[in-house]
Image: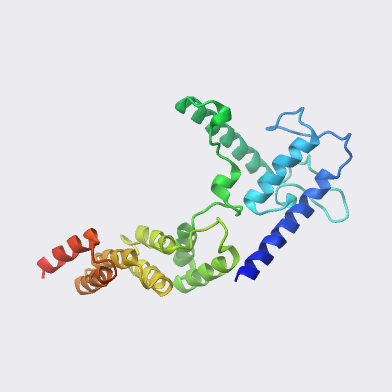
Length: 247
């Protein structure tokens, strides 16, 4: 697995370097064109540095936002791609938030922990949480498709910052589904127990989903299992006592 992750990382670095080389190697005297968010007097080197940060943050190459036609020089000035317009909009949002943080907290801009593309994107173009992705897939294509998607994403991004593959990730996926889609929530939590069989938190969440289906026996069994793993889990004890009293 480590060798696979290393290979993926080296491949990504290679793609990013290749994608930015066309911009970096353009004639030094040619100033950047059509700058609408970055300062218009910035040099090519300054613009390239920002673009490389965006590439790394989103895990993409220059062609994600810019018009790149095989056999022709990239048209970095073109506004033909919606992704470029979206990137400009997000850059403005980020600038506004950072300015607001500096004002609201009374911290000089130079000392502020600034929001950047990587803050949300963490190596993926669309910064959705894994729970949101899996819940949407399960609703549209069924649980088995969501399970396969989880395996695919884990194989591709495990060890990176993109998604939460800890025990918390599938708990966070399941809990919002409990009120209207309890059966799916239970399947996600059972899947989590396959990955983390000693997760008391998962058993507690499973008990909550089982209660939503009026399965008191199942909920009691789940809470008892949680307490086997974590005997001092106060929340599990309290809920278990309440359920036993209702018998």
